Image (tube, rainbow, N blue to C red; front, side, top):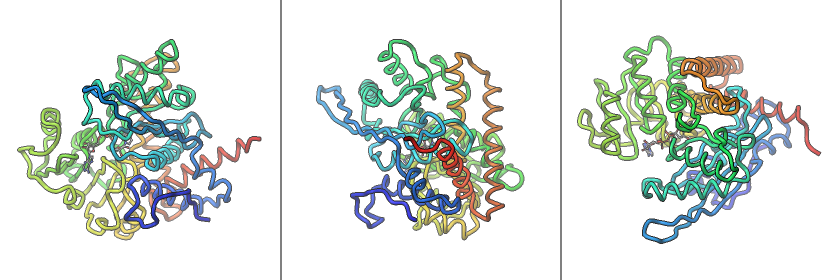
Amino acid sequence: MSITVPSTTPATTSLLSPGRQALDSALFQLDQAADRLGLDDGLRTMLATPRRSLTVAVPVRREDGRMDVVQGFRVQHNITRGPAKGGIRFHPSTDIHEVTALAMWMTWKCALVGIPYGGAKGGVSVDPASLTTRELERVTRRYVNEILPIIGPERDIPAPDVGTDEQTMAWIMDTYSVNTGYPVPGVVTGKPTTLGGSLGRAGATSRGVQLAALKALPGSPEGRTVAVQGFGKVGALAARYLADAGCRVVAVSDVTGAVVNRSGLDVDDLRAWVAETGGVYGYRRADALSHAELLELDVDVLVPAALEGVITEENAPRIRARLIVEGANGPTTPEADRILADAGTTVVPDILANAGGVIVSYLEWVQNLQACSWNANEVEVRLRDLMESSFDAVAATSAERGVTLRQAAHIIGVGRVAEAHRMRGLYP
Ligand code: NAD
């Protein structure tokens, strides 16, 4: 059986919104895993269907007195193994389809790395760069107020994603706590450490990307060349940690442009440039290149760490990286996956490669619930254990079943959620 969800969008792929394409990719991956696991039609449909989807209007008062209204979303894809967990994205093209795809990937990711969460995601269709800090705070607080009935430390715990950060999480914690009447740090993760954030959370996704890359690289990382797409929270620190491990980061890009230096970029110097100017564009110790060229560079490792659907049927035949480690969620389309697999390119899939973020979010939540705080080493040891054991499990399944790492990761993640459904049974 092939899984479909109702759609009002046109059937021609090129006309589909990026969000709808992401959801189609997620459903295709689920379908493949369900075939391999021999799941029956009812369970497949259950796994393909979000448990709760909320769309809200977010009115915002602009500095000049005007009122704008943007859309907000929160999707809880699955809550069978535990409360829903997933980031909140502020991006102009975010829609319900994209948020649903991201929520579904969160479900498989949490099951794959063995943490007791379901999957969720949230989004607001707004460009944070176009708002003042006060407008951003008003959007955040109003959005949180609209989704308040379905979030909470035992229900659904948001975290940062594209366009949101520690400050956003602090406003969420405050809005929720003011409404509840007492402080509730466990309602959100990725908070500043002064509000109960965990040591190690800020760099956790990137540290996980580094650990996954080091596991997947045959031989020593010393001198291996790396290109990173996206120089935000995940990409910038992934570049830094890979450089720390001995790799040579030769190219990075962000929304402002892409830069390359074959002798190796000084990642800290570039981060300082970005902090000063707002983007990598114009960085003096490197040459400019196009966004498309960055993805096609002849490097050992490519880390996509921006948005979905950037490695496609169109550019996959020109990708020369030997190893792709997906810091971003959903950067590779299923058609591109096939082309890369045929070419012998190893792809460490998103639900494994970027799981470090949700692993340390889980550790933060546990610390909040227990009202305690662990030192950086305790967090690091737990993160490394879970990342490495999850990687080993995926690699073993891939070898046993003769499937790609992505297919293996989905077999494990989807299989665990399916098993949880079977054990709980169907109410009533
Ligand atoms: P971010 O907003 O901090 O950074 C995004 C970066 O991508 C920015 O540098 C931006 O300029 C760049 N970018 C946007 N469009 C681009 C383009 N067309 N070409 C090149 N660069 C472009 O977001 P983030 O938190 O770093 O998230 C990045 C990816 O990682 C997303 O797919 C997100 O879902 C995923 N992810 C994030 C976390 C986390 O903890 N933040 C955890 C797991 C997965």
